[in-house]
Image 1 (cartoon, rainbow, N blue to C red):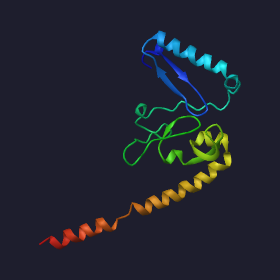
Image 2 (cartoon, helix red, strand yellow):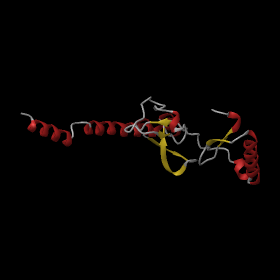
Image 3 (cartoon, rainbow, N blue to C red):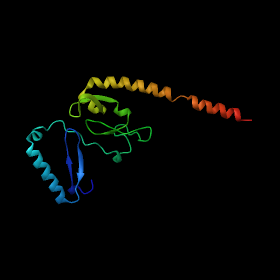
Image 4 (cartoon, rainbow, N blue to C red):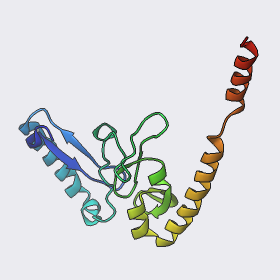
Length: 158
């Protein structure tokens, strides 16, 4: 972390992030203003569970933090909503209830968080993963476009 004396972590149920001030005095002013606001609204201080994780920034990783797959146009970045890890699609197929993120719907999580939050969901995700592997295998076979191209090329040969 560059200039750690100028930064501070802001955590909440909805979003957590690190921010930098232009100098230490500005950081202290922000910190004091936030603390004053929290003291004015005493309910916020009592509620300490369910803090949103600090997500690994997209720019910080070029590989999946779980399987080390390289991110590219086909392998997109996703975040575990419970711990903030940066994952590929294969490592983030798990969906669990994470009340501090979304109390009504299951959200994307990594396998470790899924095991912790909802062990039954791990086996459901494994079934989805095998189905996706089969579908992916079917889609990787020769497409009609590539076979048309080879027929076209053969018809032009002498």
